[in-house]
Structure formats: structure tokens, C-alpha cells
Amino acid sequence: MSYEKRFKEIASDCGMGVYGLAELDLHCQQCGEPTEELHEGYCEECCNENQAALDRHNAEYDSWRRMDDDRREEAIRRGYT
Image (tube, rainbow, N blue to C red; front, side, top):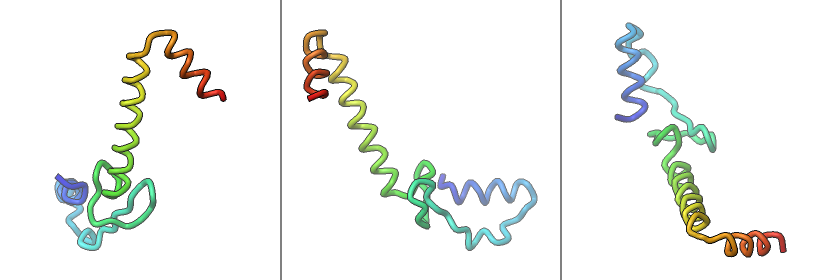
């Protein structure tokens, strides 16, 4: 269920009706741009960027966990040069 639909449902349940919600302005909490629909609280572009960053982080973490101590030390040294 989209954020907007859920918001209207909650407003209706609280007796607030949907006054003004037809023109509900949704904005991405990351970039601040208006959007028609939120995805996990973000516009689709920011949501996709965040997922890609999380995927990169997870891949780096998995790679780090697979390294033995010598390879970790080597990676650390490469990072300082």
C-alpha cells in the first residue's frame, strides 16, 4: 500500500476525512523534491540510489569477511597509500 493511500486511510479512521488530501504534496525526505509516490519514504530515484549503495556496502562487507588476516592487512595498507 502506498504511503498516500495509508495516510488517507488513517485520516479517515481518525474522523479527519480526506479534506485537503486530494492535493496531498508528497516530498522525498532525502532530496526534497515533490513526488507522486513514496517508496520507503523516498522518491523512486533516491530509493534506487539508496538500495544500490546498500548493495555495494553488503558486497564489500562480504568480501572483507571472506579475507584472511594477511589479505585484510594488505587491503588496509593499500587504503592508506
